[in-house]
Image (cartoon, rainbow, N blue to C red; front, side):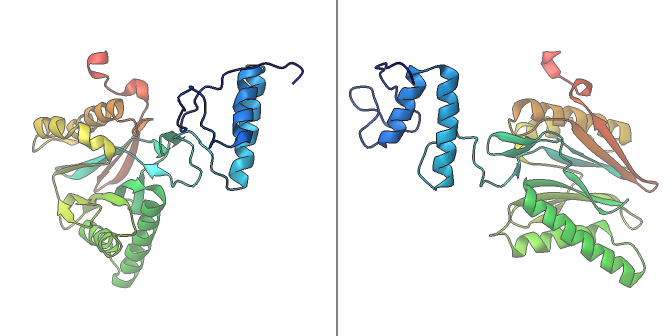
Length: 280
């Protein structure tokens, strides 16, 4: 820098300030100089220097403050809103599309509804993206092998039981909440919820993910037995949009899959196509 300038170094986030208002003497001298440079020189030059210096410290495993949302070692999480509803003749699955790493949105348009035994069995995933993708792939392999061996498609109950077994046996290692739903000739449309601990429950409708905590009351009050396909789609639209509006880990577009005897149909609703409630 061509000019000298004495500046009071403001306390940086993540460091305790001394009585004088500056950084404690325990703060590395090089970091103090860096903050001084950022305060005394051109703002953009200071920001660039700070970013370069922070990168240097990270490469050498030094202790340095980084923003809460920046964590390159944190696994992507499906902080999410997922749900499924039975109707006479089939089921509807719905999920938002936001994948986050801490508070950083890693993917705005991910697909959390995965085919297990297409076109009749699908699952909606919440929890760790890596864990749930692995689970879906493993169950798909098992049900495919079972269908080849028995010469008939696997039932929805069988696929859900495989999810339950894998999650229960590895509950201390996995972070995975799954809704397995689909149609088969034996029982028609079915929705099964598999919790983080491996509990398997069949329900007329099921919600999951971080966004579900905002809509339990709405779903309990609005669900009606005997709803048809169109009513279930509208129910999922309203519930998911409410959760996406309140939950910071849910958002993006709304994906749906309608499954019945004739097969599966995928639907996509962008933000401007979703109900906005009181916001108009």
